[in-house]
Image 1 (cartoon, rainbow, N blue to C red):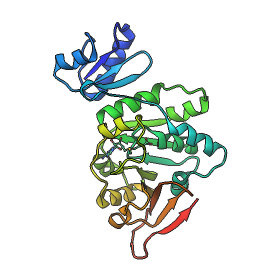
Image 2 (spheres, helix red, strand yellow; image 1 turned 60 degrees about the vertical axis):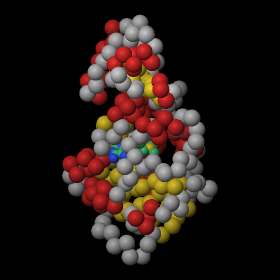
Image 3 (tube, rainbow, N blue to C red; image 1 turned 120 degrees about the horizontal axis):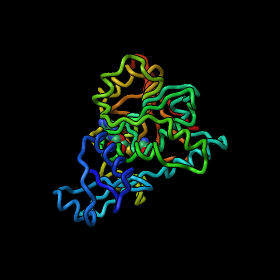
Image 4 (cartoon, rainbow, N blue to C red; image 1 turned 135 degrees about the vertical axis):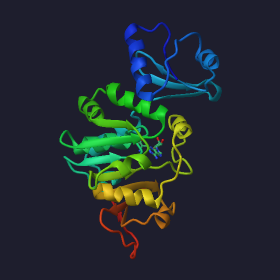
Length: 271
Ligand SMILES: C[S@@+](CC[C@H](N)C(=O)[O-])C[C@H]1O[C@@H](n2cnc3c(N)ncnc32)[C@H](O)[C@@H]1O
């Protein structure tokens, strides 16, 4: 369900209606507090379109969530300084590449990828959770950073509200250079208040070997999977190579887009 902030302008109501249409949700007038709005319509949560941003509220769980690039800015700045980023190394991302991010979330990873592939590249991001898709889509369209180049990289990301389990089988062979997954870890690495709502709203079904095989068909060059270091995922989903940073708690499994034998086990690289 979608509503607006109090005393909305006609333009804000029109934006709420557009968002509701995209989400196949209904728009309700803002009458009273958000607790009252949710109670009046018998729902647990509501997306609120305001002049500054779109937020999601669930009064009973005291949950508020809105888009912010967060750590993406820090990563982008260190990448611009020339520090290697293990995700970019694992993808071997180059200007002009076409990348499918199957787990868009807050689009932090997608923002760095979009920066690297540049104007001649393409980044498509899939997000299965309706609320997260709505908020990240709005953030991609509206968040304005003091850095015009960062804002431009954000705007180039194409967000789709879609489940990769349905999207990938529809893709032709070799539709993207790289297909990327960042599934939720069982134990969160970030315990920050900013990350907690995403975990509550996220789609949680585990990544399967079948999905990765489908992704390898869709990838021209490689599939990259982010995981907690030492999680053991590579026993269930074999990869050709594992890339990690010097001190990072995460690692990236690389499945090259060719028939996988899995015989030798992955080689390891530190960047
Ligand atoms: C750990 S978060 C990804 C964070 C993201 N890499 C970023 O930089 O912000 C995982 C996201 O993938 C989404 N997700 C999980 N399964 C999915 C699926 N089958 N299709 C599309 N999105 C999915 C979750 O809803 C969640 O938002």
